[in-house]
Length: 384
Ligand SMILES: *Cc1c(COP(=O)(O)O)cnc(C)c1O
Figure 1 (spheres, helix red, strand yellow):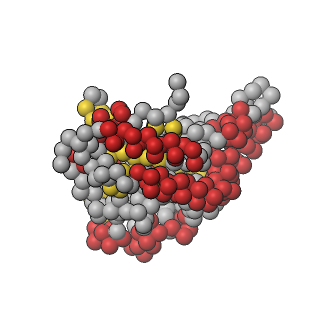
Figure 2 (spheres, rainbow, N blue to C red; figure 1 turned 90 degrees about the vertical axis):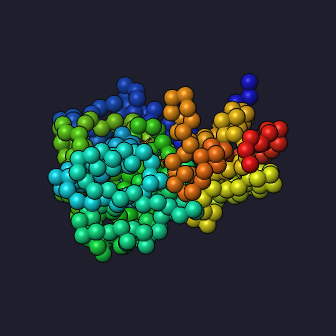
Figure 3 (cartoon, rainbow, N blue to C red; figure 1 turned 120 degrees about the vertical axis):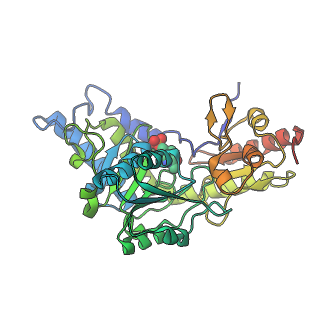
């Protein structure tokens, strides 16, 4: 059986072989197996050295100070630490501004805070999927304590004006958090230029392993975040637990590679993405979802018009893509992101997210185009 072309990089990326090699060296008896917190012997010192190298590598990706990098298990945990950590320090008082198109790893902690007394505003995007700085400005209240706006939306790839929102928040003396899981390693990031206080990232979105990520915590505000996992006081007290050396070596090497080649990767994938769109754009009733001006280099979200989404996804057997809909139990829920942008249930259902990455080839794109044209041409429209 020929495997489908992998075009679901926004869900997770393959681990770069160079990252896998670096990690494997930590998993052998003669490798870096020790506890990086062991201060009494050379095994521990060497492991700690590897962890601190990784911290510098991730800090470089963000142009942050290494002391501002807090290791976590991924962006879900980073987002939880940022939102809950800030509001726990405030005894769950005050106002949070976020958006209706955040990943569930922000939406669900926001709801959890809401249930404990925090006032939450969920900003709606424009029809292009973008949040504007004017909207954030208009939503600011005297008791607003935190603004959380994602950098790149995971479903549409739309890029939000986080630097402008950061400047606004800094001027208003309000903390700013950014879920950068989709942007870290894909586009240039500079936490000082963005003027953010907290920023989440996840290794498995930029060719590192799953189960490891980081929260950037600006030094000047570290006291304003309460830890959510208590234990040995690791990570400056912000996140306890023995550090997973092999995972951190993985995220470090992945970050190093992105610093080196993210610009080349971005230009390549954007070109391939545009070729893919060119190849399928003549299909009847096909349209793109979201801004094409403010767009990540890897995403393409396509609405196939009058076709049933479930049938479509089941028929597209030679490409591995995602529906942009969360598959909950037996029923397919239409994407809340696309619905927030004004798409109908039917339109959201007939939309597909195609995402490319470092290992996508021109042949992959040719095969995908031919397959989509084939399949969509054969399907009958179910609604007008
Ligand atoms: C993938 C993703 C997450 C969750 O990251 P994990 O490391 O899988 O927990 C959060 N936010 C966005 C925008 C994502 O794309």
